[in-house]
Image (cartoon, rainbow, N blue to C red; front, top):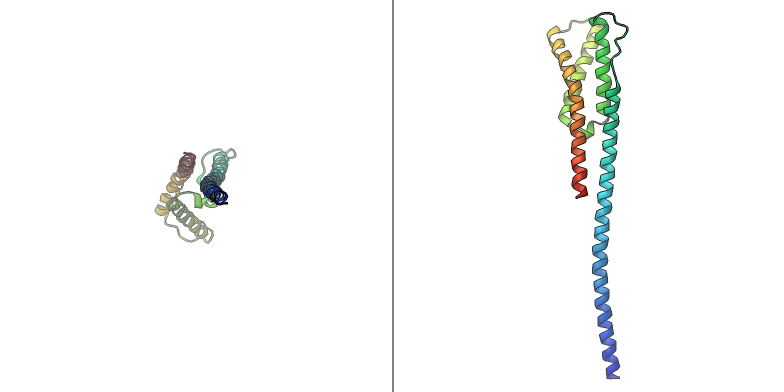
Amino acid sequence: MKTEIIVVIIASVASLIVGLINIFFNTRISAKQNEIELKKTRIDLLENRRQKIESIKTEISNRVVDVSDIQEFNFEVHFPRMINFFQQNSSNVYAIGHLIDQQFVKELKSLNQRINDYIAKSKQRLQINENEAKIDIQKMGEMNDRIHDELDKSLLNIEIDINKLLK
C-alpha cells in the first residue's frame, strides 16, 4: 500500500510537471501566433494605405490639362484650366491627407484658399493684388510638382514600415 501511494504521488508530480511544461509552451506558442497575426494585420493596413496612395498618384499622373483647342497661349483661357487642374489634384491629396505630411497638406490648403479668394474677388469684380496672385500662380506649379514628391515619400515610408515588420 505504501508503494502504491508513492507511485501515485510520483505519477501525480510527473503529470503536474508535464502539465506545467505544456502550459508554458502553449502560452509561448500562443503569444508568438498573436504576434504574427498582429504583424499580418499591420502589413494589411499598410498595404491598403499604399494602394490608396498609388491609386491617387496614378489618377493625378493620368490627369492632363487639355489645351488642344487653344491656338496660342491666352492667359484668360489657359489660367482657369490650370486652376482646375491644380484643384483636382489638391482634392485627391485631401482624400488621403492623413497618410502624407501634414505640413504639406496645410500649405496646399492655404494656397487653395488664396486661389479661391482670387476667384471669388474676380467674380465680384473686386481688385486683386496682382503681385501676390502671380506669386501664388508660380507656387501653384511648384505645389503640383511637390504633390508627386510627397506621395513618393509617403509610399517609401510605408515600404520601410512593411520591411521592418517582415524582419
